[in-house]
Image (cartoon, rainbow, N blue to C red; front, side, top):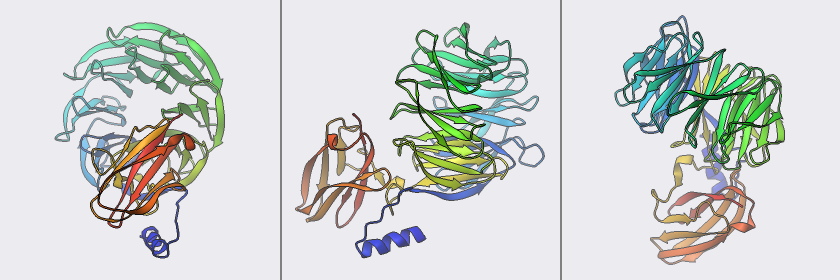
Length: 459
């Protein structure tokens, strides 16, 4: 309320107000014991939160959160110790890996939010991955050192792939239909058609987090104090990049082709250039950075720091920290709601989910941003822009109209139009070569409304 009142006062006195961070904690949602996994369903705009807890009535539960209202709207009983969630958009089902003995993989129908079945995959399932090409779910089970393959249509087990030691994480390469699994000091590569092992690559000790870069078809694997980079075509090691101690999380910024690596033992995030395979910079964050997520709408990276109880927000262009947001105790997991542009943070020791909101410009919320399909009277094309973009807009009445270009931080970059115009349809050409590459916002202001359109500039 204070923020909106400040904007109103500044507007009355014609004082420009720009919010350099544009990030704020919208609220905390009370859930059950020890939330440790999140997933967002874009079809029904709901967030599913797994509660790992051992000793309360909320044990073996997935809590359902409305993505519009941020309110808890239900609880679904699953297996014991739910620790990972995956959404299958083809069948609109949630898969929940339940770690405690006998837990299996619980399958939830997202139409009715009821349990369809529980799949016996062996003891201690911990990680899930989805092959959307063949509609298969892959599940790591640690007690038997196997990757179990599930048919996404029938929810029946169709295969089991043995591993020598400690399978950990999974990632799917859509280009070549391969599944990569980190285990001990290796990465094992599985054929997505035959579900058989193609080859095994030695990387480094404590191989853990995996990431696929679809732009250059590379796979990244954290190990010891390195990130090993694998060619997705030849399945050979390209190089290993030294990062901080205890790297355990990776995220890819596809807009700038950067890979972010959270180094838990060094309290830092390393930024790797996806083209040169070299470290661009290392960003000090907080105590024990554990999870990362990238917001493609505002080109920001969010880093959850477990022992600091906060989230650092990093600018995807400058690789600098924009702001620090205090959340709950031991933030452990993220998901992003692209409809409302909210980031959800599961706080393991606070029994809560924090909701971080992004205000693009002062007094404007993310859901006010127009898209060509949602608002035909303000359209920008092409977008992304490499040289020029044409801004089409319609005015129902005579009056003053302004078009401003804002940086993602909220800073005014340029005024493209400021004049009186009659009712009608108009076009305005913008030379995007005059600004650096990045994400911008175009603001159309008339006497009756303001519309915001996102513009991506590439070089």
